[in-house]
Amino acid sequence: MKSLYLDLGMGAAGDMITAALLELFNEGEQDDIIWELNDAGIPGTLISAEKIKRYGIEGTHVHVRVNGTEEEDFMASYSRKPIRFLDQYTEQRNGGRAKVQQGGTSQAENEEYGHFHGHGPHPYTPEGSSGADGQSHDAHEHGEHHHGTGLYEVTDIINRLRFSIKVKTDIVNIYNMIAEAESTVHGVPVTDIHFHEVGTMDAIMDVAAVCFIMDKLSPDQVCASPVHVGAGTVECAHGVLPVPAPATAEILKDVPIYGGEIQGELCTPTGAALVKYFVSDFGAMPTMKIEKIGYGIGSKDFGRLNCVRAMIGDTNEARENVLEMTANIDDMTAEEIGFAMERLFDAGALDVFTTPIGMKKSRPGTMLHVLCRPARRELLAGVMFKYTTTLGIREQEMKRHVLSRKVREVETEYGNVRVKISSGYGVKRRKIEYDDMAKIAKEKGIPLSEVKKSVEKGMKPRKTYRID
Image (tube, rainbow, N blue to C red):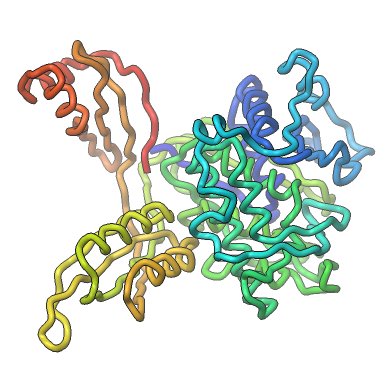
């Protein structure tokens, strides 16, 4: 089972996570990832990466330039070995023409990469969001204050990016998480939130980069150590605040965290949201055969190596904490319940199913079950309330153990057929995709068994990819 483990002993920030994940690819693949990120269409924003050595350890640091200006002069006194300087990189990749997207994507590109809808927010973004001006400061990722952006504007930018629907959904869900935390700590509606900490182009690039790279890695599970948040105070747009900053602390509810003697903000709101969204289990590293290790080095010097370490490899342990959210319904049609189930899957539910129940006044009803990761609790609760008639939702925590699941595309004499492969815990099984077999059988006018026999000949796989 392909497992990713994040060592967060020096906290978490978007740029550090990005850099650590980049190192899990070879240099050519890293160049391609950077090119795709720069080509995605974040207005006026470019990302680059370089190798640096700090405290005797070589790792990667990423730089983000917004309209040609970088956030800070990073570690000017330290030895650096550039491997992908931005200008040289874009010259090589684009024949002397740097690809900076200034306005989003064309209609054809939106059709290819997917677009949530029209010119409004994502369906799971609170409706009627409005933008506002603010100041941005992120002690781990940023040095200067910046013009802020509202949730509506952030979502509109994301809608226009040249990423898959899945990646854009992940980005929007992470911003929803941050907006909910800001709403809670400031006591204002989500629609009035000003992204003081994260609503700038460089932060959008940080979130987008991690979501895009995680999609490319496609680990079967993501585990992490407890998060070191630092200690003391941090100065931001609202004044001097305790560490972890209020929004960061709100995001990290249900996540094991700790402080220490290091004075400063080690975990930013961006880093907290990324970790909570992708990590399914916190604790000691599982028993695993490590294939690659990545070091994402941060900007600040705390007197020790300041990095996120990422390790990827194979393990037989597949565990994660999940929630089961349930609601009793007795006044919806089967079609309405089916539509709500589709919306819940779209919002990131791990599984959605129903069971028949008897309710008060001897009425037959339906219990709707939704399995999800803790980070999606608020998002999915909102979807349940929006698309069902329930007045209340129950939840309980549980652990689940899962087999690794992949899809193998097999070439047959009749065409390509997908085969689902599950493995782990000493078990390996496969199941041929019925829809593919049925389609071929209908087109060729042959029995289903003949198609199945052709698949089972064990022809060389053409393509393999992961499914959730």
